[in-house]
Every structure is written in C-alpha cells, then in structure tokens.
Image 1 (cartoon, each protein chain N blue to C red):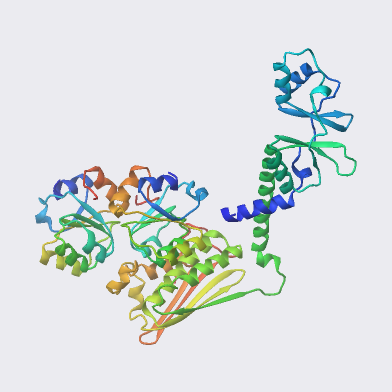
Image 2 (image 1 turned 135 degrees about the horizontal axis):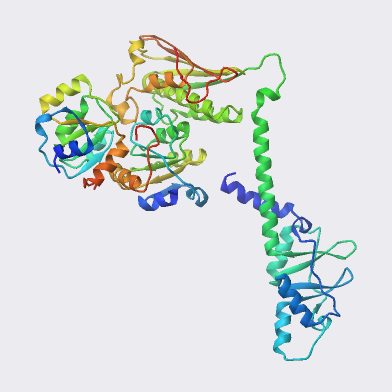
Length: 113
Length: 118
Length: 317
C-alpha cells in the first residue's frame, strides 16, 4: 500500500513531504522511545509516535522510514519541519490516538511483526 | 475482556497477579511510552500497555489509578518493579510482542482508549 | 481484601468458629420403630442421604442411604430402622471448634455428623461438609463488611476529631536524579489520602499534580522538599527545590513546550506536559522560580464546600 492510499483511507494530514507519497509501506511500528525505534523498528516502515521534536527526523533517516505519523493532533515543531524538508522525510498527522491508528493500519494490512 | 484473556491474546507472562485478579475485566487502554501523556488523560484507564519498563511505569499507573500493566517488546522487568507492583496491588505482565501488534490485537478484541479522541 | 489475607482469614475462622455456628438446627430425624420403607420415603422426600435416629431428643443411632441400599438388596421382609441403624454413632459437640470437626470428617469419611449438646447430650443439630463451607463463606463476608466499615470510620478523620482548628502536615524529602525513588512520595501520599477518606477524584488530581511536580524536581533539580498541608477545606502541596530553576515560567505553562533533553524523554517524560497538567489538576497554582537557585510550586485543591466536582473547569493561577 502506498502512503497516498493510507493518507486517503485514514484521512491523515500531510505536515511534510507531500512529494513523496508514492512510497510503498508494508510494516508499522509504534513507539515513543527513540533508542527503541533505532534498535527495533523495521527499515522502511511507518512510525507512529507522539514525539514531535527535531530528533525524530534523524531517526527516520537512520532507518529509512517511509513516514512518521504524529498522533493525537500533535503538530511538528518548527525546527522539526525544517529538518524534515532538508532530509526529505515524510511527516503525517492524525487526531486519532496511537492505539486507534495502529488498529486501523492493521486493518489495512500493515503488519506489526 | 478479562485480564486472563489479555494474557492469552498477547502470549504474555504474568509477573504479578493472582487468579482472582486475572478474572477482572478491562475495557479501556492507555497505550504508549510517555508516562507524562498517560497522566494527562481525562479518564482513568483499566490497562496500561507500554514499552517503558522502569519504576516510573509502576508509579505512573499507581498515581493514574490504572490497575494493570502490560510491558511490551519483551523488555526486562526488574525485581524491584515486581515488588512495587505487589505493594501497590497491580497486575503486571510482559509480552514479547511489539506495541503496534499488541495495540492492533487489543483493539480487535474491543478495547478502546476511553477518551473522546478515540 | 487481598487474596492472601483471605486465606489467612480462612485459617483463623477455623479456629474461631464452632460447630454450633454453622450446623443446621432443624434436623430431620427418624425413630427406631419406623420402617425402612418409611425411611426410603423420608430420604427421598427431603433429598437427604442420611439421618440421625432419635428416641425423643436422645440420639440412638444413624441411618444412611447405604444402609437402605443394603436393605433393598437383601430382599428381606420389612425391617425396622432400629434393626438396621448404626447404634452409638460418632457425633460432634456443638461447642467444638470447626477445625476439630474437619479432622473428624477426614478421619472417618462420614458425610454427616449428628451434633449433641455437650452438657445435656441431647441431639441439637446436624453437620455436613456443605454446611461448614456455607458457614465459613458467611463468616468471611461478615469479616469483609466489618473491614469496610472500619475503613469507612477511620476515614472521616476530620469529622471524628474535635478541636478548634485541625490541620495535618506531611513532608517528604526529594533527592535529585534518584530514579528508583522518584514518585515514591506521591504514591505514598496517595495512600495517606485514601486513609484520610478524601474523595477519590480529589485524590486523583492531587496525586497526578504531585507526581508531575516530583518528577520535575528529580529530573532537573538537586534536591527538594515536598510538603502537604491537609486542612478541612483544602489540601495544599508545596514543593521547594534547589536547582537550575525555570528560565521562562510563562512559557513553561504552555502545553507542548519542553526544554527536555533526550535522556529525559527516554524515561517517558519531558514531552512538555508537566506544568500544564499540574495547572489542569489544581484549583490554584503559584509557580515562582529563580534561575540558578530553584523553584517553588504551590498547588491548592479545595476539598470543603467549595470543592470542584470532576469535570468542573479546573485550573487557575
């Protein structure tokens, strides 16, 4: 499934990276602890988190993540957006809780493990 | 669902919790690694699902009024944490599943956050 | 009552309860001059498996369904209960402790015992294992209710005490960077407030506010003192710490602002929700800070007539 399809089906906001929506995603990861994402997230996966500070961009680059999805209506900080543009990282957003979003992605066939 | 069913669904290992307590039902979930977020909830959840495995997990659950905890990602749980769970009378279990997987499964079984933002 | 406490209670009860407390007093009996055929009807009608044989209110024997079956199989003519019964049966006394009664059940494998009055030796009741269990459950429930009442009583502490003015002070010392003990003061305080019978929603708000404040001190400061003043109309938590202080107090009150370093986030905190959450929980707060010296935070929650109900607009500075 592509990011574009996910965005459409789940009505997600696009905070950064509107030009990179054709990427395909098969795996998802849910965590707010950067050390954990760096250690365990699937390469190329979709990352669900509440963290909106700049460091999330570096992590996304390190793991070549397809996109970061910020939950609960949280919005990336100024320098997070700047870093995302520079590093070409996609940041999406939703008002849903992480719990609900993980479930919806599950339904769409995005696998956890 | 009952805590016993949560244990089965997540293939979890119970670190503290008697049979009687495992018969208790849970309907609402707080899922995430940020304890500060758990503390801002408007409602009190029945179950905390988190990858954060330290004393603050137990203390946050106590303060927030949450009665049972699932540690995900197979994180190691210290004896001090188990002692504190026993002192505070909380059910504590650990699963090797990732948070994403655990969340999806519990949602499928009908658990919700219980907050108005779904 | 926790499960382990219940087990201890069970053992205690075995030594506290007596046969008289759990036996059935309206015993069905038969007379030795009645027939086995009548016995069959009686056992069937009352759905029992055995009965004492009494002459007046004196126990003379026991007759059971096993005896009846033996009689029916023997193909004999009509017989009297007096001929088929077990004379001088094992019995219990009404003043015996249950623990001894259970020992008797174990030793003899009988299903029931007639119960005699220790002085008059008259038949006063019958005891089965089922009755023991019923009796114990009732006693445990009673004990549980008494425990609840005791807790309820202990809780209205201000109402129960008489004085012109009543106030309770509780103080906790906080040590910076001590992550094993971080939050201990708040959780202990929560337990104290429960004992004092404070309303649960107020306990929740105070516990959350204290915990956030305590975590801030442990994460960023060197040390702190957390003092709770519990008065009839309000509870005030005051935390004074020694540490770097907060540079911009107004900014710190904004949701989403956080100067937290990564290691703090790795602990599950520092997502910038501490102070706004404290404001949300409190009725009044006062936050003062001097950079390089420390921070003083006062949190006030009303508990008396002016107390907010959950859902009210909380939080004022």
